[in-house]
Amino acid sequence: MIRTRPFLRFVAVAAPVAALAALVIGVLGSNPGGADPGAALVAHSVCEAQQLKARIAAGELLEVELGKFDTPWPTLAACLSHAAAENPDTPGPVQPIQFSHKHHAGLYQIDCQYCHSGTDRSPSAGVPSVELCMGCHAQFPASYDEFEGIRNLKGHWDRREPIEWIQIYRLPEHVQFRHNRHLQAGVDCQRCHGAIEEMDKVYLTPDTIWWPWLLPSSKPEMGWCIDCHRSEGASQDCYTCHY
Ligand code: HEC
Ligand code: HEC
Ligand code: HEC
Ligand code: HEC
Ligand code: HEC
Image 1: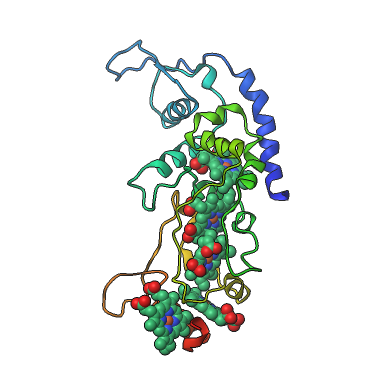
Image 2: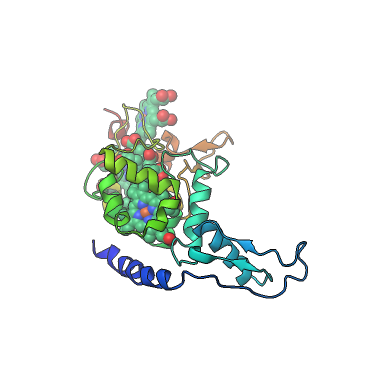
């Protein structure tokens, strides 16, 4: 829980700031190049307000009404990650909730094992419970309900219903794999799963090392396991992985 504290304090500070700022701001410049001078752009949501503010910060001269949406939360990064996570063109399957690793593990640097706890102790990594998500999200301001992903998360919480995440890394039954043995041997998550902290949606990273027939192969296939076992001096005996 220690990891969540600095962030929660940040939200607590942000809430009064948001309340104070509930007035129209930002009548900036005269919009010289704009097609319709005088017509102010109006934000209808926090995410629209964040996008307009980003355009102003980038130097555009805009007349903007942000009104009650001039709150620091949710951040522009949250808006962008949520949009990328629901976009079918982003690599990876569209999940039941628009959850972004780039946002949680990347920007906010929440430790992988805070959510995938026991990866270093047990064979499987597992996915976090709705309860673990709510440990943080129950304390967020109501402005977050603008996100479909957050409404969805709270719906699962109210109904006491687990989230049916689409599984990505799965080995056939006849293969033995244990996370803990690999982590104890010092193999990082990223060596096997790629730069998860840069992904809005998790996808199976292609294996760029093992190209025996010059065909792109996908992790996790046998050749990929064997290739690393060979270079690391780990067992290549059939019975290590198959019994
Ligand atoms: C340790 C605290 C923490 C936990 C645990 C957590 N979140 Fe978040 N979540 C955040 C923060 C921080 C943000 C972004 C706030 C911002 O930038 O405005 C966020 C944003 C989001 C968003 C909107 C942006 C995005 O990334 O898509 C969704 C949806 C979301 N979380 C879902 C979840 C789900 C589902 C879980 C559980 C699997 C979860 N969160 C667990 C802290 C947490
Ligand atoms: C805030 C919680 C949270 C954090 C932090 C987090 N994850 Fe996840 N992870 C999830 C959730 C929820 C899923 C299932 C949904 C999905 O695939 O995005 C998941 C899925 C995955 C999957 C795919 C699982 C499958 O079905 O094959 C991998 C791999 C993964 N995470 C690795 C990581 C790594 C590596 C890190 C650290 C860089 C990390 N995760 C940090 C919550 C988290
Ligand atoms: C040596 C390669 C390797 C390393 C290192 C590794 N994983 Fe995995 N991971 C896999 C494989 C292979 C699977 C599929 C396992 C299966 O189907 O039995 C998997 C599955 C998963 C899953 C899906 C759920 C599950 O339990 O099967 C998650 C989540 C996950 N890994 C997260 C992580 C995290 C977080 C780390 C680092 C703390 C990590 N992995 C380190 C290879 C690895
Ligand atoms: C990035 C390198 C790497 C990859 C990829 C990798 N391994 Fe390993 N594996 C290791 C290392 C290092 C050890 C030695 C651990 C030790 O000495 O305890 C090991 C040990 C093992 C063991 C023996 C330990 C035990 O569980 O009793 C099994 C089984 C195993 N790996 C299965 C797999 C399978 C199956 C895959 C592919 C899905 C795989 N590994 C992919 C590095 C890797
Ligand atoms: C380091 C782990 C590892 C070792 C060692 C290993 N395998 Fe595998 N093997 C795998 C994995 C992972 C798969 C699943 C690959 C997939 O589904 O693409 C697999 C799949 C197979 C399959 C099924 C192929 C198919 O198309 O379904 C056979 C047969 C097989 N292995 C035989 C062997 C033999 C024989 C040896 C010893 C020479 C061996 N394996 C050593 C990890 C290993």
